[in-house]
Length: 327
Ligand code: UFG
Image (cartoon, rainbow, N blue to C red; front, side, top):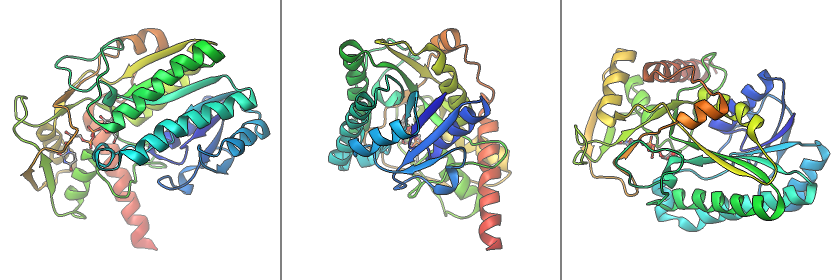
């Protein structure tokens, strides 16, 4: 199938394009390259464009005879969403609405949407697909709004959708071809790896007084290649006029301190860290119950060990540094 992948030059989108190509599908990347990288868009045609440009997106859908859309293009920094809600709602909500309307213009009626555990907010147990969604930051709220729009578009216009709610995406393609390169980098694992590599002096641990066993936040880390596999599997459950949602995680929680310990063990390097104030918008605990994804999508994670995510990220980072040193 031909799949338009918005944000296909980004971290998760590029891994999904590779998985689609390997499964015999044809990804077409649409990306404005504001945060994505052209080098990562290497698995099919590339369209330089923005999801807010309805006519341009509709034209791309028609020109490339697209069957299905996978929608990753979004802003995804929790902290920034609190200080700059305007650009989050504009990009994530109005951008998604524009994309859906471009799909209607072009007669494309199926979409897989990149949603998030940040739609849930504070929940003190494993989070299943039907848990109440009460986001505590504008990023999570923007993604929840799109889920609601998808529900309404399914009912009114017959657009079939699957929202995949990722817990914390981590790791990278084990071949080292793709990886996580954000600027600025705000995510825990890459920052811890940078400190281990000596390219960053230290890691601030945001909050050591949370109601968790060691006082730091607990997250469910999921390998980006496992996320990518779930997207390919989601193609089989898209149904006209129906909205479905699945949580994607491993069901294992790791605290920030535990992540630091594992990074030190896997890399054999020290991760210098200091306690810092809580970061606004961070729930103490986010761990998935992804039973439904396993049962209904037939999804089986290949890299559920946190050590694999760390070692793949570490290899990619070292390869990048070697390449930079050689130029
Ligand atoms: N953290 C630190 N120090 C850092 C960076 C992070 O202590 O320098 C802590 C955070 O406070 C949090 C945990 O490490 O407790 C993980 O933080 P990340 O920034 O790596 O990821 P988030 O938990 O903020 O992830 C959220 C959502 C995801 C979403 C992602 C997008 O849970 O669904 O933001 O950026 F995809």
